[in-house]
Image (cartoon, rainbow, N blue to C red; front, top):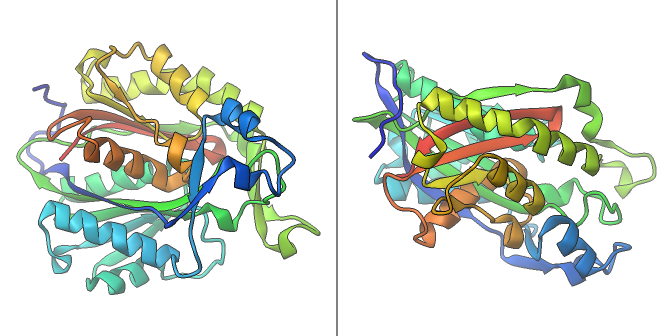
Amino acid sequence: MMTMRCDPGTAQPAILGIGAYRPHRLVDNEEICRRLDSTPAWILQRSGIETRRFAGPDETLVHMAATAVGKALADAGITPNAVDRIVVATMSDVSGAVGLGEEIALRIGAHPTALRISAACSGFCVALALAADMVRFGEAEVTVVVGVERMSDIIDPQDRGTAFIFGDGAGAVVVGQAAENGIGPVAWGGNPALVDAITVQPQPGVCDGRPVMRMAGSKVFRWAVTELPAVVERALGLAGVGADGLDAFVPHQANLRIIEALAAKAGLPPRVEIARDIVTAGNTSAASIPLALHALRSANRIGTGALALLVGFGAGLEYAAQVVRVP
């Protein structure tokens, strides 16, 4: 079993449990095309997406996140009152209201300090790095990280650039102390020159004036397949792990073509499991990586102790990546 680099003399952080919530309503490409000038075949060819899930009125950000967190705590064998911190990553809560993390804490019956990260599709990896440092430097013994999105709230159903891509859901992990390091250093950065490639803001005369997403898909695609292979290499180097030491590759589920291109350029051995949750869940932004990791483990495609490379990327254009050990 390969050991990741760690800082001697400090507590070693690791993921102790994983949980997920997927909304009940399954939406296929035919339903999307009832309001979009497209075809199911075109959507599949462009994105690899066959279905996605849209949250119902009662499946709020708080409900989905709290359910995923509860499952992660149960998986870790940890009670809610042991949680010191909750870090929430989301981009679809555009209300401007504060207290999302606190509401999640109340729902699970805990009283931790709560933070919210707004780093879009790289948000989960950013939040995970923050949680790992909280444990590593003694600021918390147990931190919960949850990525939760209702992307269906911020898409224009008639926009050919976004309407077919996104879905809803929540994924959570419990981060705590372990005998060995289970969360590698984060490689992060971005390209501010491309900040306008993905935006969320009100559009006059569109969707009753609520904020909606717009994306320059071809620009994002070129950036991802050109720049992210070096990010993969950096994250592996920081963890002291080679591509041949990985068991799984879990990138942000943005587009199947991006995932396949990154896996090929990273030179991953055929035995490495590649997360393709995008096919059935769509792009769930900050929730996509924990959902995809949960799906791999639930399907017994990876087991306890497996090393997985997580790569988040998206609006900003920002990225964050790290190697983790699967609980």
